Length: 223
Image (cartoon, rainbow, N blue to C red; front, side, top):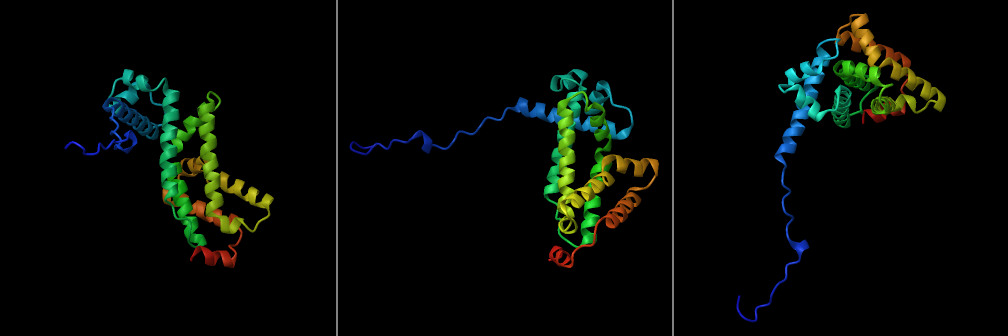
């Protein structure tokens, strides 16, 4: 720099932000938690018995100590698994297209809902078992039911909108009960239907419950 050259003061805010350091240990810990959650869910789906900490640790490939370093107890692990399942379900729901004809919406909704029930029914039963022990568990159950209710209202808006408020609510309650986890469990376990047969049963029942689709709404959903 020559004498007389202006000195340019660089303000701190003009500097590019320093890259944040990635804590490798924190990332590994989060990955370990996810693996433990996935191991727990796999074991839940394999049999009626609640998995033990030793079984979860063995499936995940870690020690029992590692499990309890990341979760205070198995109830905390169950809550974390519920959050994992909820996040996955919401991510899928956001991408769903709810346009189409009545029958297209029926098939799409039943496929979505039955897939959720088939995958998460064992976890749902564990949550119900623990709902009186933990407000956190009760809150997760409420969240799941609220999302299901809103999804039904949105998917069948064309058929529900013309109804008086009381009738609309009664019909939504019936649809909620028809497509809940336990209904799916009874259809599959008690009555021995395959996934395809159970879906057909739900589609038939929902179609009979719903009022006729208004002509103008039917045209709007196919646009």
